[in-house]
Length: 488
Ligand SMILES: Cc1cc2nc3c(=O)[nH]c(=O)nc-3n(C[C@H](O)[C@H](O)[C@H](O)COP(=O)(O)OP(=O)(O)OC[C@H]3O[C@@H](n4cnc5c(N)ncnc54)[C@H](O)[C@@H]3O)c2cc1C
Image (cartoon, rainbow, N blue to C red):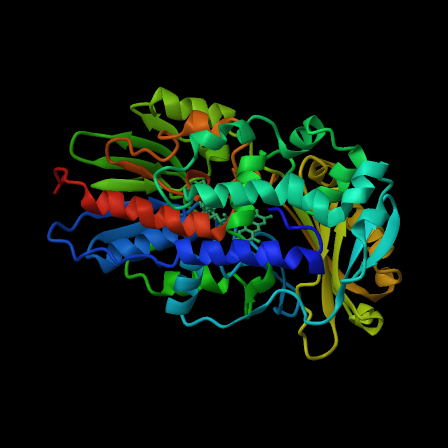
């Protein structure tokens, strides 16, 4: 997911304005479904955030739900990695929760979970640009970090980001289409033709300026329209994490469910009859067949092609399955004996011009220890994927050393995670790429008979927990409001 480049004083006012607008448009939290007079039996496939929220809301309304999950754990792409001593080490998947993601926060509140800020207060970030190390504070002129042509230099970083990124965010906000059926806005379709890097190049920006504007973990395959949407709903000033690990959110929701969660049970086939749904589940011997009135499918589209549907999914959805490209992401976390960087007033966070970031997710550990995590997004994640575990750690630490010299001396253990290698994810997330939004509109989430579709990839908030939560709630609502014959 994109981060705005390091916070600068002159960026504060446009950013604040944006956040205020989002706050005004999206105040409502998830509504409760009315109690049902027609309880249904429902299978939810997938125990990630979308499946858990769907199950919770359906049970609250009086339906009977069982979840079927391929992995041996719940949470899906909310996955906290723990150190050998059991303490949370780092987030392999979802790592930050912006305050503006109101539905996610609503569920965090309902579950009574404590949170803390992602960033430590008052410390400075590092940027690595063209191999040079910069310490970023309010006085740093980011435009000086690269060799810009004179006219771009004259605009400065603030002028460049305003003209080429934030003005589009303002246009989108002015259209008032976020969280309305008018998304995606056809009046802004011209911003969905190229990926952000090609769009900036077509605007005549130099490679140096493009590098500056796309610093950090930035999915450069998305369009300016999609980027504007992410930024319009992203409150960088209030990013938080859940105390004890983000996986406490799915765990808490699961603990509220009455129905069973079958783990280690990959669904291989879904057959739809006039009066019921049947699924074939592998793992159980002999292969189990489960039956229900309806099904919510939260399987990422990156791996859904391995499930056999009878009758086949409609051609429009099959076309999306063939086209969808999941963003790559690989992370390598190091448990550090000391947060030595704090003596230099550094936060442990850094942004690189290679589509990578360094995070310091355990900055509050009372014993002075810490974690540094290398987070590579985009096609370069494939370079890490090709390595074995020791080589990955060595490669990632090589980059961390450039941002925080001496880091290698403090490593106690390391852990990596490639979402491309995860057979139940097939990539990090299904954020739409140029043209996808308008081409897929109306088909990506549409129900097919008794099958309802959820998952971040079906949501306007794709690539976020917020997308999973909203899509789970939406699919539960669709199913709840449908009338169909029961097989019982
Ligand atoms: C590297 C990375 C960084 C991220 N950063 C952030 C962040 O900072 N903030 C944020 O809010 N979000 C972030 N996200 C996104 C967020 O994690 C996801 O949007 C969200 O967790 C997706 O939930 P889901 O329910 O849609 O899918 P999943 O969590 O993938 O759940 C789907 C479930 O279906 C299961 N499944 C798959 N196939 C089968 C099968 N055949 N049978 C049975 N079960 C099956 C899977 O095992 C999985 O448990 C990040 C994700 C990644 C990967």
